[in-house]
Every structure is written in C-alpha cells, then in structure tokens.
Length: 179
Image 1 (tube, rainbow, N blue to C red):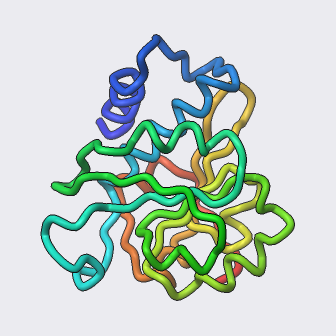
Image 2 (image 1 turned 90 degrees about the horizontal axis):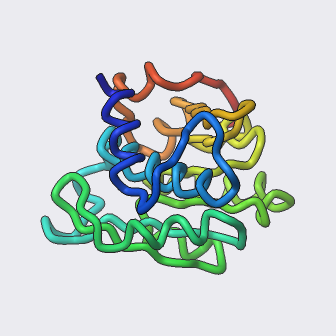
C-alpha cells in the first residue's frame, strides 16, 4: 500500500510522465524530489522543535548538484499540516534552521566532518552520495540499475532524535553505519 502511494505521488508531482524503472538524469531527480516529499509523511521530529503549529517544515539543500533543482519544487507544498519551505544553504552551521538537510554530491570530500558537526541536531539527512547511510547519514537515495533504491540508517535517525515509521523502514534496505 505504501509503495503504491509512493509511486502515485511520484506521478502526481511530476509535470510529465515519469518511468521509475528507466529514469533519465532530469527525471531521476524529480523522482527523488517526489520521494523526499512522500518520505516526510513517515518521519516525526521532536515536538519542541517547531516554535508553533504554523511553523514551516524547512528543507535545506547544501552544496551544488542535481538535487538543488528538485527540492525547490517542494516549496509551498503541504506535508503533515505544515507548509514546506525550501532553502539553499552554504555552510553546515546553517543546518540548525532546517528539519531536513539534503546533501549534494559536491560535499563528498567533507562528508565525515559534516555528519559529525550535525549529528545531534534533530535533522533528517538525505543524500544520493554512494555510501551515505553507512557513513552516518539517515536516508540514501541511490540508483541500482534503472531503479531508485532507498537505504535507511535507523541508528543515525535515533541519534538525530527523529523517528521513522516502520512502514517506510519496510520499503528500504536497512544499514548500520557510523553514529
């Protein structure tokens, strides 16, 4: 059921038909953006994280890469009763104003230091960097052949004080990695 919802959301968000089994580079990142949108409905942050009921859920993008074009499409959408706000950030220290941090491949060389700096912030980290989840990131959206695969590091999520629904965990490959 969850997979069906995810697939239908991907098609619903895209302005053109997408084929999850053979994504081109542009459509691959629209699919990943749609997946991130749907993933948010299966994540819970600490209740004290938001100043008010009307505070937005902020998705930040760090670094340059293809994800920086997909995430702004989520700006203004609604998820879990909150408006989504997309922000580009330049420095890891800015992650404190985010609930979701999408890390582009340009940050690969700094990844261990970056994940260490943000490890205690209630932050859902997402990237398509190969080995991201095993390195201590929460969700990796990688490519396996012509499919987008999801890997989740539950220990990293717990460390960041976020909860991921068991329904989403069932759809992912569970990895253990640095905490």
